[in-house]
Every structure is written in structure tokens, then in C-alpha cells.
Amino acid sequence: MVRTAYLTALAGCVQPAGHAHNDYLHPRPLLDALAAGFASVEADVFLVDGELRVGHERDELVPGTLESLYLEPLRRRVRAGGGSFALLVDIKAEGAAVYAALRPVLARYREILTSFRDDGVEERAVRVILSGDRPIAMVRAERERLCAIDGRPEDLESDPSPFLVPWISESWSKLFGRGTVELDAAQRARLQRLVDLAHGQGRLVRLWGAPDTESTWAVQRDAGVDRINTDRLAAFARWSR
Image (cartoon, rainbow, N blue to C red):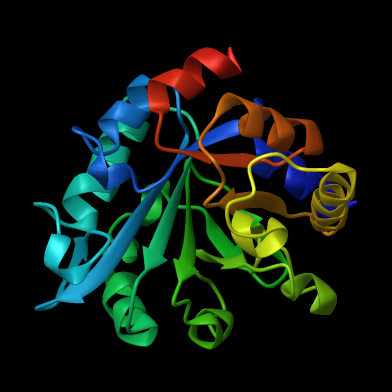
């Protein structure tokens, strides 16, 4: 089936895969993740004076832009023979305005970016996924797009095209309660149902806000979670090996 093949292509050859949460907070954004073997990173963005700036809060922006910190280094990596990669762009505010500024930036990197259509994709080395304040209607309206949407569990009810919504992400605390570290049998079953439903629709699964520990990584791995959020790049790399 088309969706099953698409899931296989998205998942890549290693499961689970680490996802560098708030990657820009590491000493060397993107480069530290690449050095640790990660192929998925997250960058929070704001639109500031016409530039796509990176940071968790508007008053905590790091030097550089989404383009200089991520897109240009990824293009150099691809040209040097690097493999596939996922860049999760978490729009912190003003989704429509950010996307209007992001669209021409992505167009400059068309040669390395997967393009998404309603009926399929043209795979290239880098997949851009929009999260946060997602301009879903704007993205859906385009015939061809250089990014896709990070969905939520409620999206599984309407079953949108996996070429529009290839990921499903959810908060650990929303699923299991704030402060939850260990999952009981009912909670593990709830997680498994989410993963199975998303996979059945051809989507990957990611949780955010989970305890950043080996035991929680293992719970997610055992359930088939595809992208495991972590701030502990070296520790996760050792564990995943």
C-alpha cells in the first residue's frame, strides 16, 4: 500500500531515532546533533524584523537565523554526500506571517527539500515539518509544498493525507498526567493504541515533554515511537547503540 511504503521511507533505517529537542540550545546547533548521529532536530522560530530567528522565547534568541543555522549547513552536508534528515520548525507565534516569510526561504533550498503534494511526495534529502502555531490551511491550499504538518492525535480521527500530516506529536503530560515518570499497564496500552493508529495511517509518532531518561526512552522504543525527544544527545546515542 502507498501509505505503508511512505511510512517505511519516512522512518529510515534506524528505529527508534533520536530527535534533538530545542537543538539550538546546544553549543553547536545542528552540528552537535550530526556528530552524535542524529537525523532529526527541532528549531523554534519567531519572525523578527523580517528574519526567521531561532529561540524558545522572543527575548532569548540565539545568534543567527533558521537559514544560517540549519538550512545552509544542511545543504552543505547534502552536497557532501550526507544522508536523509528531518528539520522540525516549531513556529512559536504568528503562524501565517512566519509561513509567508518561510516559503521563499525554503524555495532557495528546493534542491535538497522533499516536496509534498496531495497524492504523494518527491523525496529529497531533507524533510521540513511545521509544528507549533501551524498555518494548516495555508499549507494545505498549496498544490506543491516544501514542508508538511506536524499533526496531533485528534487529527487521526479525520485521517488527513499522510503527505500533508506525516507526523503525529503529543505532550507526554497530556497523555499521562503531569509528573508521570513510570507508566502502568493501562497507560502503556494507551500509548500503544496511539502508535498503532498513527502507523496504520502512514504516520510517524513523537512525544514531547517526556522524562529524559533511559527508562522512558525504552518505553517509547518498545511502543514503536519513531522520534524520541531528547536534550541528552551523547547519552541517547550511546543508549541507542
